[in-house]
Length: 411
Ligand code: DSN
Image (tube, rainbow, N blue to C red):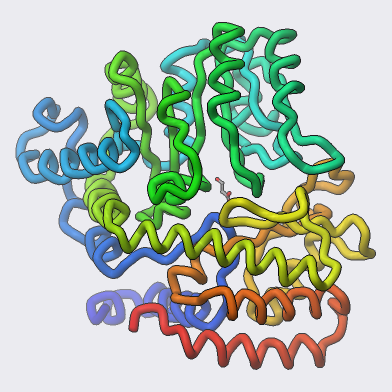
């Protein structure tokens, strides 16, 4: 980065500091990951200079032959990876992907059914502070208080009652397997379009560690940077019959020029996701999450649904005199990065919360396994027990630093 260092000392310094932060802490935000050097290199290429509105072979600008090549690679790898008919790799983010999916099928004022944000849903699934909640009439399903799992009978009952035009399946804080087949059946019964937002678990589905939504959905949207371990961005998969409208909704309806450097990087990541090594990675992500869940529960930490089938755990702090916000800050002081999260039955604001979301994708990329998860689970439990104990937190910080040093990111 010698050019950056010479040209802009302050940005250079921030990058150095962020690199040190990422290396020296345990990154356990469930939606974050570390990309490969190849994925990162592709992001810094000359494709950032290129305008390429349109699709491969049908662009509004000249000079697109190599842009066509990388976009075609990304599209074909995405369809092969997920067994889908069609892929659009241009959405700048998961939110854009969801917006395109909505507008492909419904109009402002139409009714949608999505998961309650406090129960693990996502802002774009109908939250009043998001375009989805502003533009559509929203009904929500949630999880059962007793076991933290989606109640499919309730989903059917709400769907029959509200007759949504579109059902949005998917979550950002649900630790259990999603029954996409059940959602698909409910959508068919009430005549709704079925959209699955796969973002969190896309890498697990790609590796065969979670059932695929593709046979049960009209459209599947995802981010590319979570368990899929690609660059920050979005992706849409759909049935052949929806290809044209989905492509038109991404461009020109909601976006302008695609970020071709990101598309190139998505192609690299999707290529990596097709390898046996990526399948093994996904298996380890889930093994690690289960090991972490066991370690925490053995110490009396309550988890929503009593465990996990995926890459994340949701800690329920309602039995303690501790908020999600304070717990997040105490863990951060020890070098363990997580995020506060609402839990089912939440009574606090989203800035405070009564829960923590903890994930294993990034540490698994770093090479950590179940033994490390057991140790980390012990440290987390120690801190949750006595979040104000500075000496204890400092001691754990030292051990975290030592553990991180044993797992260099880009060796
Ligand atoms: N912000 C993402 C997450 O953390 O789950 C969802 O978009």
